[in-house]
Length: 204
Image: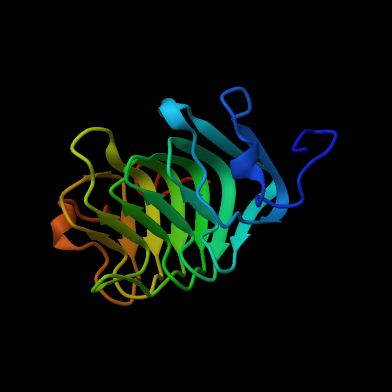
């Protein structure tokens, strides 16, 4: 189960089929999300790669919920709740990912390290985390160790705050505009770049 010859129909059983020797997931076309977190012990990296317009859609759970080191590329993620949830102890790496139209917010980094590049976050929120209302990206308690970086990211048209942070992080080439409230909260420690270009915002 979960091989090229016998592919899974959704992400549901992915968390239980992962192992130290099976850590690459290929999502072809649109698939439903798992309802539990994805992660391997011992710092083993799980890689999730989209093909054929790869997309993961969540209903009662995030499209992508990670508790360990995870790399995702070439994916479109959306959910009726939060699109991406990364919890304490995880390191989330995104490259060429679209996070769109998620009612509970786009990306929630709750104590997780992260390196998010060339990613579009649009049309999400409002979400609630405790008393915090957010929309595009919420960075809560970034760890002292590990990366805390946004690079060439576009955050637009999210409901209320585009990017919310509990502490300063690194933001390079981040284009945040058109969010219904604040584009980037001052606590994040960086500001939006100017017009979209090769060095400002996500590239195709």
